[in-house]
Image: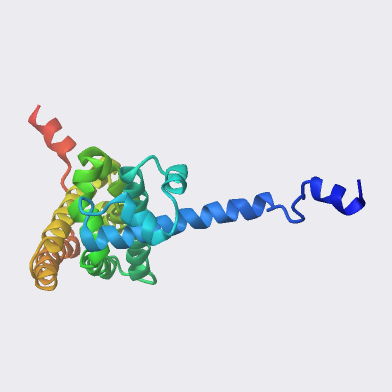
Length: 237
């Protein structure tokens, strides 16, 4: 057999084999693209109206590639939800940057939060679709993981302002105040996001919560002590 004929019988070995790092980078970029496309579609159409076929088609990947990263549509939605919440948290934290005065910090945090809930992606994905897709418990868990810590920071700064207990705040009362404010802001966010006029609804919320903050500041400046339920219970015995 001639050498050229023998050469044709020998299978060709690829001269360039993708490196492990390159394959990982490709998989990572595919996942990011899927999340980015899904976010855009979920924000525009809502969760029920968005299909996996639309997502993979726009991302230009196969369904197999999608299922390599996510178990299904709900798992992909949760990844999108987490990304939108992370961006919201970063935006609110940026609004708090360099705010030293606790009352100004609270007002800045409120405004930053109200700006976030008016954004189309946040309105649709987090506020409108989040509870029904994730379920209430999972939704609250995700929400608290992303923004609750910021509310704790703001509330702690406010409660330790002025002459309240020489700056010493009972941790359980701090958590109670935080839950109250967090619940109020979460409810306010829903009312803004679901409003026909989100900008006007946000102005109303800012006015209402601003009024409450003004009242708290007046109490702090007057040296009125924070409530102590334990002391009231002991005196009643």
